[in-house]
Length: 300
Ligand SMILES: Nc1ncnc2c1ncn2[C@@H]1O[C@H](COP(=O)(O)OP(=O)(O)OP(=O)(O)O)[C@@H](O)[C@H]1O
Image 1 (cartoon, protein in one colour):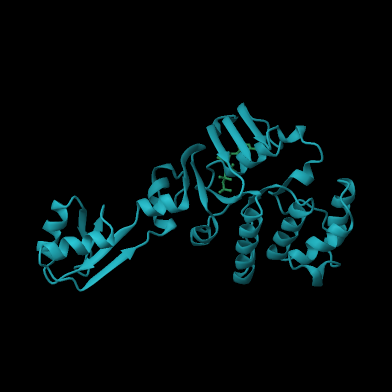
Image 2: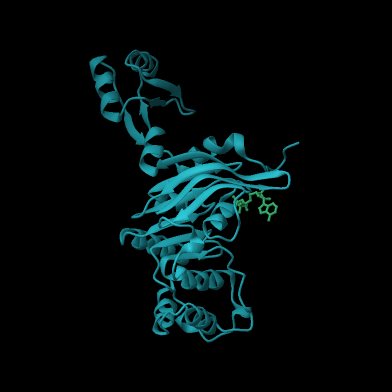
């Protein structure tokens, strides 16, 4: 469990995190979304005691991070994968971390295998690709077998196989009852990975919602009928919001597919297609954050 209460971080003339109150629950993957500069990394840094909040509190497992006994056994983080000694091998890097945190040396072998770095564990980190460096960062985060994980863009640099591996790993970790907070800009990936979403815009909380509820609220029904104008009127009378698609089909909100079929039947109108349309997280996210994007190409 991670709890933020009125968390605020101000830099000289910029509010990076603005009065953020939210609980990140265990047992599920929580996606942490927001446009560039919306405060995700700053929030994670506050939780990890790396950045001091201007106001408010961030606790993890009920206490501030710095008050945790043996923190690596409780909380794992991937926040700055570049921060490591380039002359060390992956194995040495993890062994130093394990030793300085009183973790058993065998755990190094376990996490090296877990993240798929077995073949390159004795190569210097200097020559690692972005994806290999990410895997090493994940290995370090998992070293203490922690209950809570904070991962800042963990799929950055991973190839499709790596992305799938990461998705399965995060889902397994959450299924084991851990708290998993993960930021990403890859919406299709997030849609397949996260159970819950926390969305920021300019440091403020825009949404704290389950994936099912968010996408369900934007679901629609697509219906084609040779009598579309009449069907549109009938659906409107039944309380639906109806719009016309480019190919002449109707897009219906406010009624599910069964209800749309029933309305058509009751009105004696023929239906040639009836499809439930699941919203994409990308579309919903863009409509949610549209006003709160700070950096946008081509904006005057
Ligand atoms: N050390 C710092 N000094 C001054 N401003 C900072 C500092 N760290 C972050 N900021 C500013 O705070 C805001 C939030 O940045 P942050 O990195 O937390 O956003 P983010 O949501 O993680 O962005 P991205 O998706 O691009 O990684 C940005 O405007 C950033 O420029």
